[in-house]
Length: 384
Image (cartoon, rainbow, N blue to C red; front, side, top):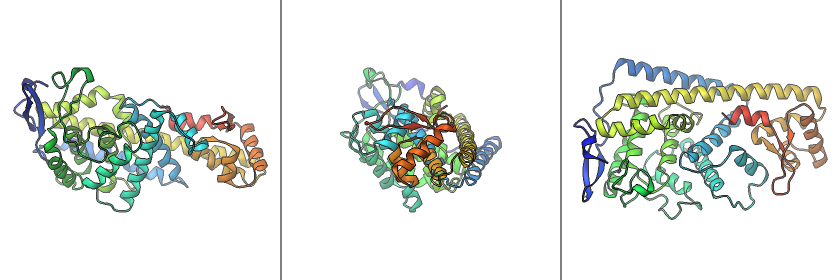
């Protein structure tokens, strides 16, 4: 990090932490930001896209199908941005067939932990828990519980100095050095006090500013990216933009990774707030449109599958089994029996009916259990 890259309009100051090594101390929020009418119109259009997504989701009989699908996808993609490589099919198969089985894949463990953290966060928001420092620290503790990084002080703000960049470059060659550890608590107190106050910029611009500040503070030793991305929908829920967690940003940020990282750095170096906010709003709108497509696909498939089953099966457990298929994607006879009802022979007959009408196909054995896969659901709801 080089002093000459930081201009007089930078929203912070450079501190020397060791010799020639510098760290960036951001100015507390809110920034002195000249908001233009075009930016406010963009924010309003973005909010309209979110409202259309929320309205579409309300048309679904069981909105939990959508919420769980989007959360699973976010857990995989957000973890992938941090170097964890797990396929969505692995997550679905583990959840459906062997959730209590020992898991030897640390990447899968991290994704499952993140998914549990998302679920817990929504519960806390629904319970009206304050979106404050204890909330964020508890989320972080859950994220790192029992997985790699557990030794890096889960739920505790860092006291050590850290850097962002390639491991081998060290502090001297780092792309960015966040504020020294002794400033983190003060900066986080300031951040949470502004996160839940939409004034003076409105909730979406506020979210853009808050996300920049969180990523710049980098309050934990590990897990900052995942927590920072998760805070976006939680903040929008708290500000009344969303009533359920339907909007996640990992896919949009990952597809535009260079713009994302360069945009954050440009704010620190030159105070380039407006390009960053415009980018952030663009990503929210893209995420809302993508989620709408997935919701549409789910609704279309659900109606189609129910019609196929009505015409092809006489079992009273067949329609409940269709809901199990959408909830789980991978199914076994035991799972269908447990969640749709009936007996094991009944479940096998229903599965045969679903195979016959093209809803399920045989899949691999998982932990010794024969499974069937709803490939079309996997492809059209979960995958790109």
